[in-house]
Image 1 (spheres, rainbow, N blue to C red):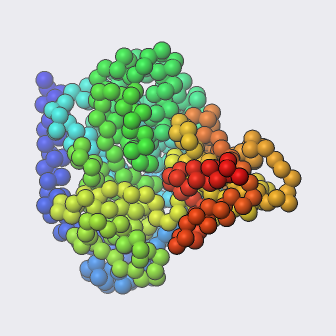
Image 2 (image 1 turned 90 degrees about the horizontal axis):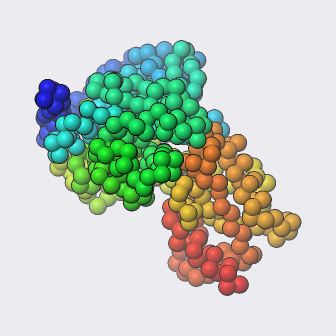
Image 3 (image 1 turned 90 degrees about the vertical axis):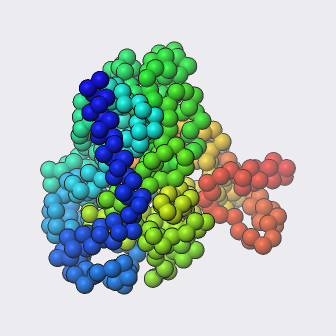
Amino acid sequence: MEVERIVKAGVEKRMATLATMDADFARMQRDKLASIVRNCADTEFGRAHKLNQVDSFESYRAAVPPTTATDYDAYWKRIAAGERNVLFPEPVYSFGLSSGTTGEPKMVPLTKALVRGLKRAIGYTTASYMARTGNYALLRGYALQMAAPPRMRDQLDKPVGYITGIMGASRTYPFHNIGIPSLDVLNEMDWGKKYDAIERRYADHDVRMIFGIPGYILGLLEYIAQSRGVASMAALWPELALVVTSGVALSSHRARLAEYCPNATFLEMYLCTEAAVACQPGEEPGLLPMLEDIVLEFVPEEDYGQERPPRFALDEVETGVRYVVLLTTPSGLFAYAPGDVVSFTSVRPPRMLVEGRAGNVLSLASEKLDAQQAARILERADIACSFFSVCPAAEPSPPGHEWIVELDARRPAESAQTLADRIDRAMREANPLIQHLREGNLLFARPVVSPVAPGTFQEALRRRPGQGKILRIYQHRDVATELLAIDSAR
């Protein structure tokens, strides 16, 4: 058929590019670094760091130390106020809202080149699936994107929204005619209303692909299954063949998603607000870095936090080592750490796995809660604790936190329900993203609070000679189970 023939030709072109990336990744990264520093050399940042003198990775590392969002806060505010040529020379395409946990999320300025890279990641992932399966009819159906709002407000007449929504709103070939939902639905803030609109408008469409954050997708499928009285989407979308996720790890959601999409292939992309970092070119584990769009460097996790840690280019990494990722992007980020830790399953060609967040961070739905932020939330909630620890709640749908708290015995006793209400309110007030995720209890659950008796944490400490501490944040429930067992036995 003519459509399949055209699609196949496009797929073959993309696969040829992927093969080139695998074979020539070291040169591509050197060339990309040269292109970015040359383009940004005459910006304020470029002049301050003498980017015009950078001619290699070695000189780049001498010129620019690792950076974080804190280093760009003042720059981003100035760009949002209308200043030009601060970090990059091009006009701003849009502003992506970061998922900061305290205060107003930062507005990350995005260039057209960076947004193009985000779309390219989707294109490569989709093309790889079609090349492996021969399912070139995938584009005869609809592509459903579960995304946060792309345009919550405007700044300098540019949209300000979440990156998943910005991608969903800027649909280009081949998704320009088959992408759903419509922009009014994408911009709906209330997740219950968004799910309802999609169910009413699109449950009877021929949906063949779904893109989005796993929790968003799962919440929608649960809603549609209940509304339509079906056990899986196979009854409504029999041609649903591909589910592509990003934002948080697919692993904790894969089994339940597979129940609703029994005939689908599941693939991941490594996307963050600041850039498309990698895509999955095959069903086997391992992500391919987006070499055409960004420059990647890697700091061994054990060395991260030093003023000048060792940094390795993509052709210098090793398997079996955990690295903190550094990004250099067309949107004026230089050796920037988004906070992710990766390891490599293969170095030639490069294939990496996202292992988690740098430091002590819990991120079940992109909320990124760390120990200091958790302490501030308890302070905001006026909850005095001798000790506390936060982990994933036992009930995984929707994901949420369980707070194990050893309360100050001098304070009046309060019920777990009251404590949970206060933490919930404090989290919403501290972070607009959590307020958004909590709408309707569909994407992020109300926190669970488990008070334990005085002395519980000390007893646990006594049981772990050589460790000497209990962390405030865990990505598993092992320590919570131990603490609750000690409390129960007291």
